[in-house]
Amino acid sequence: MSRDFSATAGRGERVPSGADLANALMRATHTLRRFAGRPYRQRGWSTPRVLLMLAVEEAGSPRMGDLKKQLGVTGRSITSLVDGLAQEGVLTRHADPDDRRSTRLRITEKGHEHLAEIKALHGAHADRTFGVLGAAEKMLLLEMLERLERHVLDQSENAGN
Image (cartoon, rainbow, N blue to C red; front, side, top):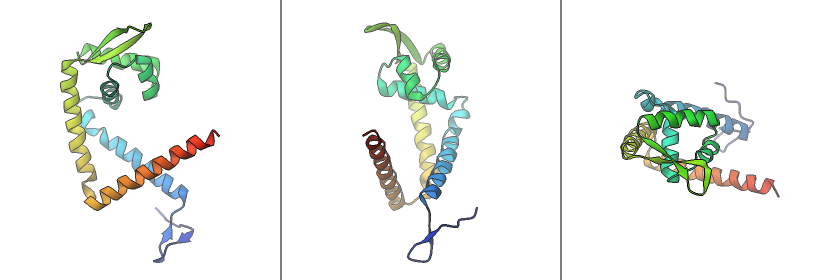
């Protein structure tokens, strides 16, 4: 891959453009997402299944419709995922007391055990993934990513004004 950046840094290095950085970040994100799903796939779990379980845990007892929006999946997809997880006994459906047209989800005791395994797999895999970085690099990367996120959120909020 050729890197012909237009400006130069102090030591004669080329400075990447915003497009160069965006492309590198998108490639890295795509690679990290695929790699992050490996331990789940080895157990026969899909990434959407894992994300759904984590989202339900975070929300407590969310409406299926809210999760559909949050996860960016279709109604058919969320229903299919929930059906499978309910059959396995890790999720239950229950009526929404505030809206009888809505269904809420709840994690079962077996589901909490499943989530503990998911989190342990994720932690070990993420530690191995980022093990290539030293402590200072990890701190710097986190700081830079958080700063970039804040900047993009500010830009998004200001774009509407």
